[in-house]
Image (cartoon, rainbow, N blue to C red; front, side, top):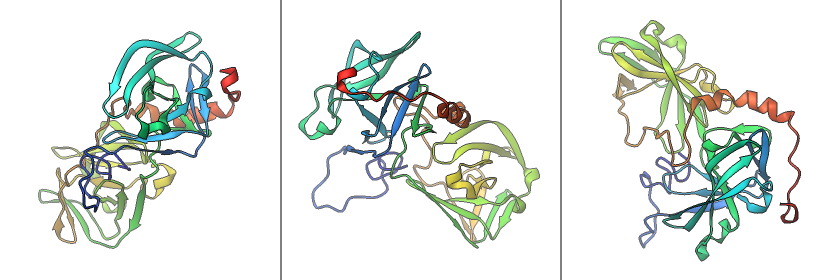
Length: 307
């Protein structure tokens, strides 16, 4: 899932390898300019906005956005006495975030004594995703975590023969599936509803969301729990799969051109990182939040002199 998450190049479970003569370090961290305007809201106010954001990719974590300290609204960061130590980046100072009567503890952090190779993060602070009201790129709310620039979805139409069975019962059969190639994952096959025996699908409560595709709804098939899913209203970036249904090959039998598919290792998504979680309620608020932002006053540009 992108550069350092799931099976990406910097993840500990990467499916690829660097073709170099000498062994690489056990852990590789990568930082780069985001080159997008990013903003954070808390307590109904913009607490930081910047076009000088650095994105940190750390093995098996979602990307983390670091803002220049002198771009943070004055008085928002309240130093805490607690400190921790990052295994690669050294001592970590923690802050509470306060706006008016709203207060969140351990809501931001800064690496205070960085090694020489990590000066790109000097004098920068990151905000805990779940502690803030919302993160934005321009007026668009970003949900789940900072967008990974290396994560992509490619959708292709194909005429391959896909059959889904529950025992002897055919659940779906098509020669026009869509295949979705997502960074860090094996291909997923999506079937148009006209080619599915929809009476076999029992909708179940509970949704999940993907920061790159939207809200997923799930279906039982007979006694097989959550055997299929659909992005009923997939996000515009992957709108081609909206309403299509995909089937879990370790729960029901899925055949592609006569070959039975199996769930490949590393396909299960880990929904929670160290400082953030993938909460379906967050995505439901996305469009509402965007409307509110468009009518909100802008954050006065901040410089070191007025911090």
